[in-house]
Image (cartoon, rainbow, N blue to C red):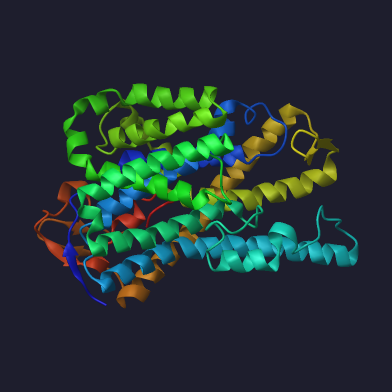
Length: 426
């Protein structure tokens, strides 16, 4: 399949890569389920809002890469296929790890060496939920229980958002001003409705897909207004203040009031997209960029490692029932919990680095070969250089008037990913 599409003028959003990595780390802390001195603070408890940040980032990145590049149904299919191979290999690999855990429970029951907290392959780990995860539909509003690698609900929703996005581009709706007027009202009302009716934005089973589409739309809106936003240097000048406001909201607000952080997320992303400013520089440091590069793996693999920690801890530490949440929790000294938390983060970082190299990257490369039928190689254009990873170096970015094949230009999926969750682009 071949298609000629316009080149893009910017290689990647470097600062937003770093922001995505920091957000992924916050999600890891959110899911730690044993006593310690860090994860009980309100800032971490509100870490679920990092998923909304992922959705916004994803909308911006996908729009920047593809609004002007999907012109035919064939190109739309290419886009969907590339997104599938960006998300699915790691998703199915981690899902297989969770299946292995359930199989280990079955084996343990047979040999009387393990007494699981619930019967294997039941409840959220049922065969029906397994099929939903295999077909990537677990987040589309019909599942009613936490299931398997439950952070992947956002991956399911985001893939659906990709399909809708390709349709809006093909039909030309996304280029119409009424689309953004109506969409802004609808997305704003959706967030307000979720906050009011649930007194939180941590909704997955009923409004999860709405939450995804609303956040994704705000990313599209940032792209639509990019030229005007970049012209307003005050956005960059005040990005530190915006970031402090975000931290303040996450640290102080709870319940329905957390919805106030969504417009701040939009402002923060808009201020960072130019890669200028003090916060942008901080997010371009090597540690932040490392986190950004492996952020999708961080998001997807951390829960199975946490489950492994808890399976061991439940056999070594006393348990107690917490009536406030209706669950049995591990009871350990918080200082020991702090040590275990550091160990967990280190192991997740190491594991994510491995899955990035052995699953994410090979899956992406296989997807390109599958879609385009040829191996991507280094190529030098008149004004742009395609690197081995597929990224166009900013200094050599081709002029907008140039065009070349989609399989040579789908370069952002390597660098400008958000995901998270979302999600996290190819």
